[in-house]
Amino acid sequence: MSRLFSPWRLRGVELKNRIVVSPMCQYMAQDGVAGEWHRVHLGSRAVGGAGMVIVEATAVSPEGRISPGDLGLWNEAQEEALRPIVAFMRSQGAVPGIQIAHAGRKASTAPPFRGGSFLSPGEGGWPILAPSALAFGSGGSPREMSEAEIGRVRESFVGAARRALSAGFDYLEIHMAHGYLLHSFLSPLSNRRTDSYGGSLDARMRFPLEVLDAVRKVWPEERPLGVRISAVDWVDGGWDLESSLVLARKLKERGVDLVDCSSGGIVPHAAIPVAPGYQTAFSERLRKEVGVATLAVGMITDPAQAEHILVTGQADGVALAREMLRDPYWPLHAANRLGVEFPWPAPYARARS
Ligand SMILES: Cc1cc2nc3c(=O)[nH]c(=O)nc-3n(C[C@H](O)[C@H](O)[C@H](O)COP(=O)(O)O)c2cc1C
Image 1 (cartoon, rainbow, N blue to C red):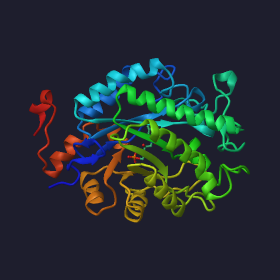
Image 2 (image 1 turned 90 degrees about the vertical axis):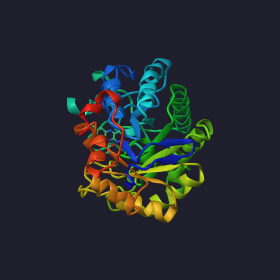
Image 3 (image 1 turned 180 degrees about the vertical axis):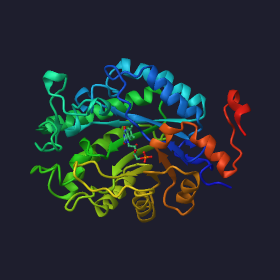
């Protein structure tokens, strides 16, 4: 019996296995609208047998995009373009999920494959919002958000959650990781506010938790809600695992079903010891000490490694990113490797060895 291929229930939603396609920005949208690239990219990963496919970081407002090519979910056209993609993923037995995000001080850049550098307004960029007027590395200079802007961004998250629901998604993930807006409120390295949104750990958690509470109210009871966190900043004086444990308890109390445990991204100079399984210890601590379901992510590439993470109780599910770009059919191959009976899509059945 394989744990990786055992079904997984989150509220009213059942995943056929514990393999999740991690959210991956494609930078291929036009005005935030999904196109043929997204249909094929997401569709192939659903055909490939993953239990859940999470759509890339999708901006809740135009200024919340990392680049002009980001997906968005602030208007009707964006919602309508996602609807058939969601329906196809579901028809292939994959739970359709989406990550909603605001890029904060990492906004207004060219896509990585076009250099990734900061775009000034003259180059098609836009003004940048952040908790404090502190740039990310050599990026653009953000403006410190007013309380009114904080309220507006919270409502943008709610609007995107409503549209995600209407488009048919079963799982919603709030992006609180990788140095984007909500993480930048959490971390003392990027949040130097002196009002009630900065200073103590409680104050730094205030805005991300307000977003969560507002989103949970519009996201139905029977559908799971997740949060991706950067469990640590990998910098002395930054966000640390003890803070993540405190946050995870609050997330759980407020109706979060899954904590997706990533790390880093708040500053460009952090030394991150990237190696197979380098983040699973975070997922394990949160799962065991807080009693919340977790997703492990980061250099998980081998079926036996994925099985081991689950069997040893380090996580409830595994998210794969780059390996799923190398091989969209990873779950089908993993089933073969682990000797699991797993149905292939009918038109591909003759290829199953
Ligand atoms: C092309 C690419 C795009 C990514 N975009 C996102 C994203 O939209 N949201 C996010 O939370 N993480 C994003 N990530 C991070 C991955 O989801 C994942 O956490 C990271 O790549 C580590 O997993 P891996 O070793 O399996 O690739 C991205 C990674 C890649 C390679």
